[in-house]
Length: 270
Image (cartoon, rainbow, N blue to C red):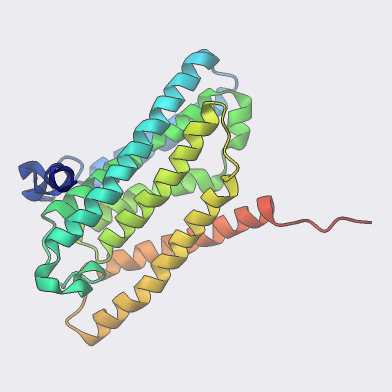
């Protein structure tokens, strides 16, 4: 068991490519505003084109199901690796037992380097991979287009921007966001995978409730972060955090509305 843990720790934290990782603005792949703008614009234009194309189905249903299953399986496993890797990275990188670092990177003293930021970079690129969620839905035909909501498109578009800003500004609370979001996505993509294979689990509602719990947890922990920020020397990337907080608040409102519309018991007329 000890050797297994040592192996996991090496491949997820101590490997030189991970432990020596450093985000260099404008040099690291994907580290420019132009890259983010191009990725989000391409996503929205492609989705708009596919939606307006009507019954565009270049792939057979069987092939599309296999591609969707592979996509969901890959993102489920990647999310598990991110949640585990970032958790272990925090344990390795937290300075001298100062656990406030987990929720408050010291302002001006936290360059985006090391294993925690490596996994934040992986999370950033995973959000671009998640664009395929939308494309696979639209390629399933008119029924898929009807399933596509504003919440889905808004969420997928803006989360890429917030992920980029988190790295570019060494945003405080970054490891909390990566671990909780990745953990929720393990549950979500496991559900999608099993459903696509014809074994629809009975916990569809739990997927939405896990996402809502994630947002609520983020605000609870943010209270602790703000305490450290205003009573100490400040937390890194606070303006980026403010932008992300507004985004999370909007998602919470939209997810609560979605939950209420789909799962709230309706009063039946006698």
